[in-house]
Amino acid sequence: MHYFNFKKNNLYCEEFKVEDLAKQYGTPLYVYSSKTILEHFWKLEKAFEEINPLICYSVKANSNLSFLKLLTSQGSGLDIVSGGELYRAKKVKCPGNRIVYASVGKTDKEIEEALKYGILMFNVESVPELKRINNIAKRLNKKAAVALRVNPDVTPKTHKYITTGKKENKFGIDKDTAKDIFLKSKKYSNLRIIGIHIHIGSQITEGEPFVKAIQKIKTFIESLKKLGVKLEYLNIGGGLGIVYDNEIPQTAKEFADKILPLIKKISLKLILEPGRFIAGNAGILVSKVIYMKDTPQKKFIIVDAAMNDLARPSLYSAYHKIAALRKYKNKIKNGKKSDVVGSICESGDFLGKDRELEVKEGEYVAVFGAGAYGFSMSSNYNSRPRAAELLVKDKKTFLIRKRETYKDLVKEEIII
Ligand SMILES: Cc1ncc(COP(=O)(O)O)c(C=O)c1O
Image: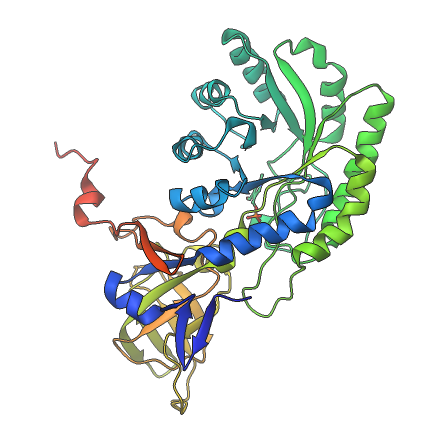
């Protein structure tokens, strides 16, 4: 079921005509469909129901508090990567035993806060970090549960910036070092090293790379078992791909069918960390056309959203579908393809290139697949206030983040 649909040539989000929302709340505007968010979460839950995994939504994908509350109220846990994300998790009262914490550079303060809140476990990425967590836990008189993030060394077909499970990536610990840690785990008196974590990358549309990684980890776990190492958890991270263009990504069920036979053989409690799969197609970025600029080479559709609002096209050359909120009955034939660009002083500031898009000045466009790594990666570059965020839920609209003001831009600054 899709909740962003054209009805009578107008784009709707659930029951709401998006153009009305754009007029009421202004642009650039992120619009999210709660039905889509929940459906994605439930699909994953259902696909894996026979083993009842802990699904920890990856906060970095979209960290709005209402977004998090919607998911945690359905039993989702959270995958966090910073003290700021822990703060958000606390704000929505996510129980500590449903929080896992990854990141290659956790600071003492962040570790201490997470231990005090009683998170389920840290996903540890290096030996120095392991020692640090042990020392802080000792000082606080606590036992910290940890999983070692092991690098399975697989190469998923995705953008090089979002592959994370290769040997040369900064993430994770190689298997030999991990084995050594497990065998000498007694020296970490305030740690319980009880799990293995992997995360091989993002926007992975096929099951094969996951199967390969899990197969490698299964062999590793078996070798550890023979050496007397007892584990409780296997965390396979996130990474499930979504539709941005014409991909046909695996469904939750297809994914589960592929990996469940292996997972069942490993027989550890499974943790999943989906981000994009839940949030990506649940949001659009709505923007108004400021100018249509025709040049001998190209047409430019200059809109009021820019790379500060949605960084993915500039950052990874990521493709996002873009459509006018109003479909024309008779296509206007004006020849050239258009680049949809923002007003930022960078040639890399574009939302889409070479699009056949029919739209006029003053009208609106929607950038699809913007629910994940959209707002959460946005910035104030060029002193642009960040966009508002709107959630459609229960036949109502909720402003879940106000548009920033110029005052917000400078509120922490000091003129000397
Ligand atoms: C450790 C970890 N888990 C989960 C995720 C979420 O990935 P995705 O949004 O592709 O599901 C990421 C993304 O970078 C990650 O680094």
